[in-house]
Length: 204
Image 1: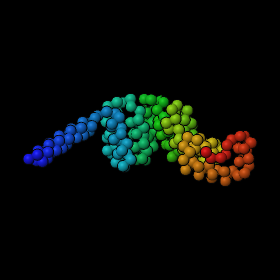
Image 2 (image 1 turned 60 degrees about the horizontal axis):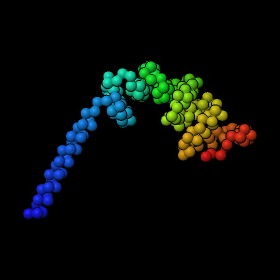
Image 3 (image 1 turned 30 degrees about the vertical axis):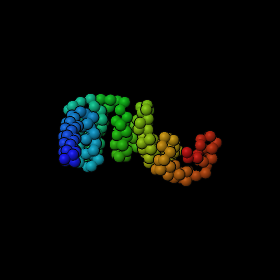
Image 4 (image 1 turned 60 degrees about the vertical axis):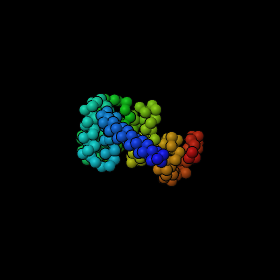
């Protein structure tokens, strides 16, 4: 008798918990905010579901047409579709909404880089770095800047960008291998000059 009562209590508790879980899930799914829409769109972009991502981004813009991340998301979406003109247009729209939103500048830099306009890309990367007061995107900004500078054969500047990357993220293996590659390319004279200028050539 006592055992059956305990079992009945457990069943009731389980059902109550399940109902609570369902109602909580329904509540979280019903959140219709720019932040939630943008997060959903990013997940869809990562999975390659571009049409669904576009719908989520357009809904985000409908909810808040001043939400700069949604415009950067649209730029990335059109870039992945191969529509550079629309990608650039949405980057400019993002800047109008929030000129200090660093990914606006990073996205523009990547668009220029992909188009082979490396000098323009360098300007955008440097602008991103200067606006990133909290250094939230500094690692990727410096590393991508270094790669673009290498394409321009501006190896010493690329070296400095990679070293900035390593200073921020000592475990950044790609930046480390890039520095080693540049040392081999520029040779002993470059390393001697680094020592003469008191610039540490030992990777941290």
